[in-house]
Image (cartoon, rainbow, N blue to C red):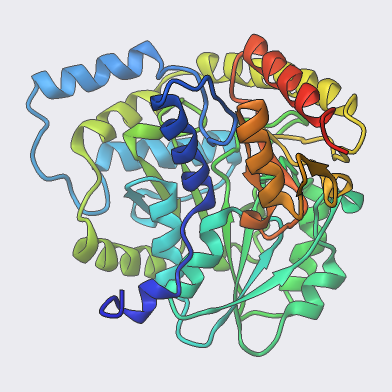
Length: 397
């Protein structure tokens, strides 16, 4: 370990990946684990998307792709922004990457220098703060809780901004809470940002289509700050394509060029076959996506009903994504077989060992004493999971 670079030593392991691996390890030993830790749809990729990938293989679309993505895919993304979001981003303002995580990493590396401050509202997706560390930046965390539906206030944002502030990282619909900012709430944030022209916004909109409250609102729709916004999206959540690894960002041309320069040295272009699959996904209608959203809405309501019956769970009502994020602090201090549940990590280990249900500790998302439960599973599996959770929690004293 002593020979590993400092930049890697200061990184934390992904707790979502760690919990997912623990679940798989137990499953390989024959333990019947219900894994609600993973953040991906349980649906299969749409048939027409798979067919497009097969055609691409047969047509020998197997050579290096352009660093920034195939022109026809960038055209499709441009049309998507125009038709779905009323945002004008020509193809030259778009870059395709190896997943939305890669797009976020590109944007952070391009915008953040040593000592720059990045405002990260908590709860946050686990990789945000680690990528900021990797870029040499300083994370400035704004805390929120269930009483504010896990949303930051304009006053909190203004208080967090300093002369060193370079980026605000925003995620709506949010992972891990499912919180969705309304247009009015975004307008209030924009009013603050207009007073600080040196602050950029990276807007993670990967859960755009898993939205239960109406039309998705992008902060890039506010013309006053659009030239400071980097919009990140991809095909993984909307089209059940997590393993295909195709994400993209749209931004001012100079940011896109810088991302392309970086990507050209790190990874080059995304998989040629995956890009052809993504082209089919974006070029079709959203019938399949709409059916997924309907299923997730039904599951959300099922899970909220089951969780509400557990004395000690305190939750908000998610407006999107496919997670609930209950406060479980009422269980901290309770015991099982003499062992004390000290925090959310202990609570998740208790659920894994005694309920055989995997969830992720809230500490990973900057919100200790919470847990993230994914409801990207069938109704029957979710009911079985909560049966197990209820039975296990009854054993605590």
